[in-house]
Amino acid sequence: MLKKALTLGALLLVSANAQASLTGIGFGIHGGTISGYNNLTLEQSVKAAYSDFSLNKNMPDIGFHVVVSTLRIVTIDGSLDYGWKKVDVFQGLNLTYSTLSATASVRGTIPLVILGPYVGVGVGLYKNAYTLSGGPLGHNVIVLPANQAKIGYLLKAGVDVHIPLIPLTPFAEFRYNHIPTSGNSTHYYQALAGLTLNLP
Image 1 (cartoon, rainbow, N blue to C red):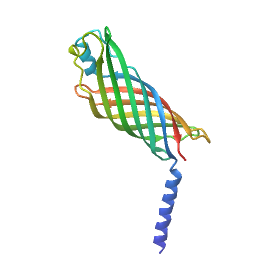
Image 2: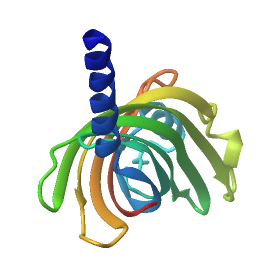
Image 3: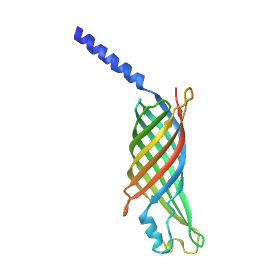
């Protein structure tokens, strides 16, 4: 009887602690820049026709995120991001390239009074797309790599700012993304800032 009571008490304690550590679910938006966009296959494809071409490695990024489950020091979240760039290759011939990603990550947080610095790792589906438009020559000269959807991974670090009595959490985050695309792998960095609305 005593053993059953101790077991029940332990289960209740674990349950209480788990409930106490649950801090909520949230969603929000974020934006920023992609830098260091290293897509050697794409750059070499254009350089084969226009040797003086250099791939612009910076592009804007917009996204939406959901905090799926948040514990006191561990957070699981999902993110949908889109980055794009349109550049002039030659006499009105435009190259547009973009990256669309749907990722899930786990991060560990160091809980401080207001700030919550964290590091994390994640995996996701990345779709890289390339198109040409305008110009006198177009597709007859440049052979673009095929649009691809690949599984990749990310590493990230950031900081949450917890404002007392306000359900909004501003944050800043830096990510490294690596996608094993055909030919040469693609990788890039993201510098992001956003807001998370914490549900009651």
